[in-house]
Image 1 (cartoon, rainbow, N blue to C red):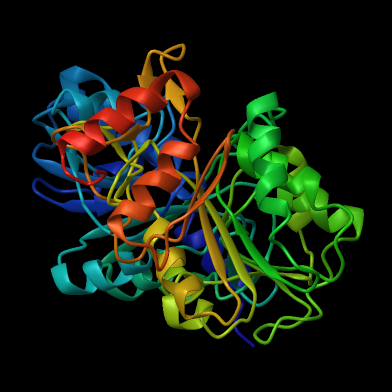
Image 2: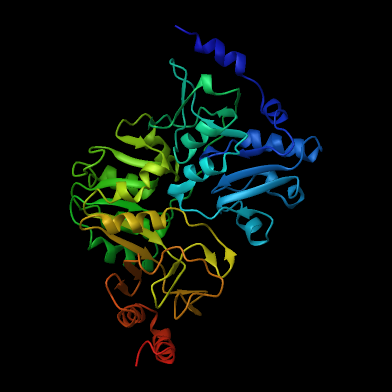
Length: 434
């Protein structure tokens, strides 16, 4: 039997030493959010500021604040590429200092395979087990696909990272260097849904049958739906993101995963983000399976599960039913994420429904999110031919199978009352309504 502890000691070094191995022009990346190793990227930023390396390309997804390399002075020496803008990278994206990779979340591994240029992969993992394996813990996401392609792999071992099960392990034989950094995991506050979100959650919950499999995105509406579903029976979970609202549902007994046709009895997710309650829940929990995103978000996998209910958020929608969920006009805000993956998958699911929820207005009721046309430059996240249901605090507009005229009437009916007359006028001016 190989002595993995000896191998661990031989590869154990410092974040500074790992950063010193990164060369000019290297393409570097880390997995989504929780997978980005703080000590390594900070050491890399220090090496750049000391003019010891330059023209490094750094790819990340849902990057959180607090990383030195995001500061303006590093632009040029570190070329940042965001695959989904988070709180840490959004400003850089809006000012053009951080580049963007347009993609559905399910396609991330495929894109890396297409690019074939990943020099360095670094990630956060849980402590090694007796067999030499590290768990990626709070994520699987695109990481396995990246592991297969990376020329050099370095890991940051964090004792606070939960140990989870699924297809999210890396063996010590696959890594070149190890550092240790026991920082608390990033937490996303579990904010309580407001009254408008509770209304939207209540509308959607009425369409969720017992035994349904559900996917919930991020935000107050998802939390509201979780609260509205606590009395349901035998729900299943198959979701790209596992959050507090889903854990609450499981602990309430509404989720048993017993009716799922795939991974029956298991809660399936691709990454987790929430409070410590989520991380404690997934730690060594055999009922939670962390799987790569090209499986979890594969529309044809989603479509094999009956009564699949998907809930995501939008920023605006036009009379055609085109949904923008990632930009404010041309200004980037987030990314495509997995919204279209689930809209497409649910379309295949027998009895499936997809809901895109948004408040009817923005900026203190001065802007309607339901518009004749999307704001100029806005990205189309969900195509008009794939959209199903749009939800605001005024109800649900069911668009699938409806004509443009019918869609326009449905959408105006769930717009804020102060904008309905104006929207009707615009629809007549466009010869949609006559």
